[in-house]
Length: 452
Ligand code: PLP
Image 1 (cartoon, rainbow, N blue to C red):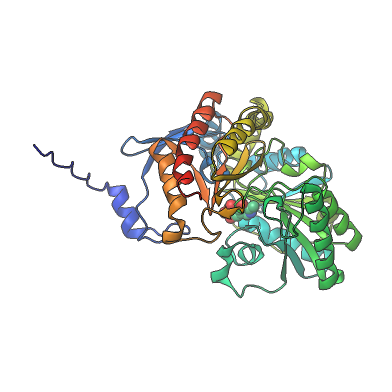
Image 2 (image 1 turned 180 degrees about the horizontal axis):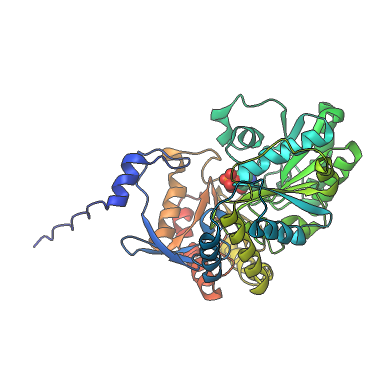
């Protein structure tokens, strides 16, 4: 006898309202409806139907302390019961304590914090600060970069998401940063890539006229555009070029700041001190929207006796800042930043190297701390990517199939173009991390089928 297929469950009220009334970031409402997420704990979250996933993306690389960390939830609740909101011209304990703690963990000489609601606004304000400080206009940014979706930040980004917003505000000039696996400079190794990328940047500065350049804006470790860890010496070289020409160095640490790479800021790995740092995401693990800029004393000094010409209604929002105070306390007390480094070195790096040797579709493995990328290819010899860098629709199908294979097995992957980015919450249990990597291993069989 033939069994009838079980009927699809009727969409829940939340699913229906989502479909009928919501426009989500970077989405069309004709896209397949997303799962309605009902809850989470630590490195796991689940939907209304009880399907459960291990989160290898930390949502959008922000959920460093995992879902529903009791200390963080309690801090937000306590602040909500005391004072929910405040205009930014008042002082309050949560905001000033958050600024003090951030200055405390920032590189030496970066002591003053301007708060925003997220990463893009942090980038906008850092650019403004650099322009006011130098009296110059141009900003140099990398092709493989993402800095946010507001007008200035998307113009400063290098990836294809900027295309529909062009022509954007003037003054942005792009350069190629280092990327040994797909070198723009035909370099043979990391040392040569570093040398040539710095020579190219020096040439770009000369061709643009250093006297007109306010800032070099770069992601310390490039995030959404590929988990690109710069070769040793590159950031030192950028710092030297900035010093030689009076250019402000802006390190965008929105994705990697606050522990992701196994240091408070990724730039700490190289001991380089930028003039401005942008941060968001990890500062309070995304529990309440918060971002900001950390200013060097030389840049902050301008505002000792005159007003900074910029502001936001919610700058230094007490709820967000109370969450930051608790989150920085959690990083310290639970040793999570050191944990990111140790998990990266002892579990993630060796396991991914094993996957690279085992699967022809794994072309490159790279990362730092708890932030890794697998680059998938059709052909490991000529490095043809599994899907083109700006693939959509049918072209992107092999990566969509790979992502679906992960999700079916209970893992939430972070897939961008032809890459799997691995960024689990820093609290993930080692056993869960190993299980997640075993799921990646199994799902890679799907990608291998496309290999020549
Ligand atoms: N800068 C970097 C490096 C980012 O990764 C992001 C977001 O992913 C942003 C800026 C923009 O941050 P937001 O989405 O909070 O505006």
